[in-house]
Image 1 (cartoon, protein in one colour):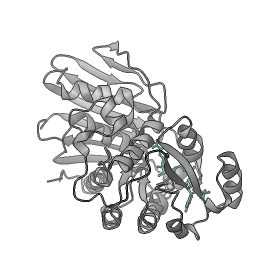
Image 2 (tube, protein in one colour):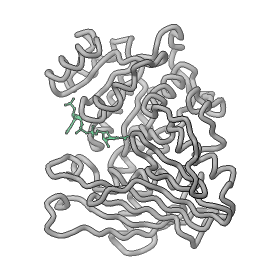
Image 3 (cartoon, helix red, strand yellow):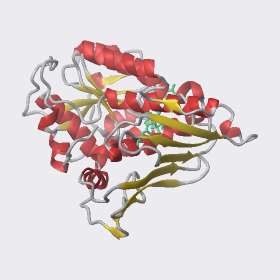
Image 4 (cartoon, helix red, strand yellow):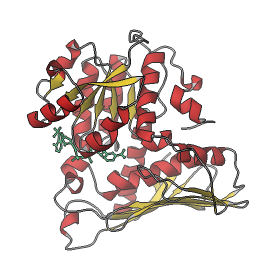
Length: 362
Ligand code: NDP
């Protein structure tokens, strides 16, 4: 969880996160960028993450891993990846013999993350895994254990922690600029289509909560800077909608935090309506992110006035932070433990939705 966090901390890898006993890997050659293998060449990898390496001095794409030879060929050529550094899922364990690869970025459906993360760690590589980290708490623990055992870093791709407007919002919260809290709420949603892995429980691990609701949950946690102690949830899924045969649609919940009991720390998520915001109301003022966690075009308002924040490329900042941590032997800002916390709370949200009872997170 964040302490006092500045943009410089994020970009350089805060000293507070310096590793001590478990930094086993060899010093990387500081004159060379850290080498990244991208695993899973779908939308997010190819449209957002891979282009964000442009202009990086600390990070370079040096390998690709994909289930489709045609993609390996197309993106391999586009990114000048040597043919010997293009792997299938069957051959990916060979990356252990490729010294150019320092870290593997797993960008596949959530249920596949555990296997790929464990294989990458066993091959001696650091790993970044996309969100949600994995469908279950046990999966997340397996991933954390595998990376620890290999003595390698595990980062979860929570890009918002590296994004300038969100960092400014966190600072306002840590400095208590709004005074005593009255309410905090975050809503995320979009209108989902049919025929996607996102609506298949076996691949997604759940529905809107896992995919888009996690932004609200994670934002509530990073804005509060503390862990919730209990949760009450209500889940509403329309009947006869082919998108929601296997998974939930709308999830409403409220969280109690140690410093904020009996008030509203709430999140709402839906796959039927576009929303992307958080709002904090305090006795001295208000803070609103709207949109709060998009790919670009963020707006942060404090007391109704738009705050001037120099925009950054959050995808690049997330990758560069990981590269800095590898190079400088530092802890990552969003490690596996951060992903695990969200999954533990999401499971409690599901339990509360099922039983109608408040669930303790103690
Ligand atoms: P896509 O469906 O566009 O791509 C997923 C890719 O995963 C596929 O193209 C495929 O790559 C690979 N894959 C491996 N195994 C499977 C499988 N069993 N079924 C389907 N695909 C498989 O999804 P996204 O790119 O949108 O999402 C990927 C991950 O990134 C998810 O965890 C998602 O939550 C996360 N994400 C994060 C975002 C963020 O803002 N942080 C935004 C969007 C997504 P190949 O063909 O190369 O084998």
